[in-house]
Image 1 (cartoon, rainbow, N blue to C red):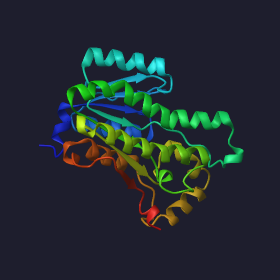
Image 2: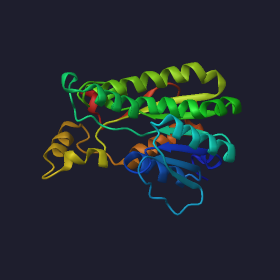
Image 3: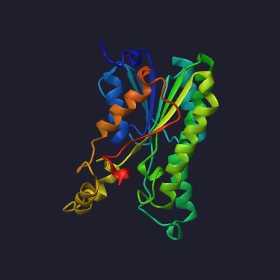
Image 4: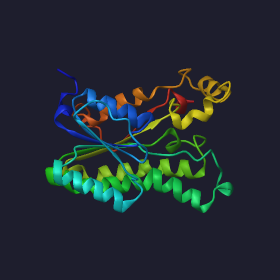
Length: 247
């Protein structure tokens, strides 16, 4: 029996599932036997698994997202677990160099999308008195220096939103937590590995663990937080950063 055997009876929604951490979560949850609904603006490479449905959708487009999730809920019933994983970087841009349009783009993709997805599925979760959220924050949500002004602000906000979400709905069977990854080797961080990979090497040197993590390591933590094994973990942020913020 799987240590996370409860997930085999649940439906998991994952955003940003076309690559990186979201893609790793997709495969990790399928391994548990869960049914997975995977969303991304990009085409998702669909695994050969009948319990996986992939949909290409812009989760920042409220009308498009709502139509997608309304149809799913009507055909398949409530979603049990949501991994709000989709997000973008901002090039470490400081405030004076951040345009209003760039600020809005980062905030909408990283933060507002989580609010839109959450509100689309939360009523059905409350009705069934059960639901779990695993929201993707970042070490940039805990300290400065992990991103630019917009990215850092968005990740701090995700942590606050997650805590408030759990506080407001825990009595109705809802759990919400978030993950704060450090240096994870994903396509989103490809620039750090460009050329001779000097930046990636420097980041590894500055990380107490001495390396970058693989997306699967974050996905495994997601599975734990989503499962009933973690039922008493509420409204918290779990760093997975190789010791970065201990410095």
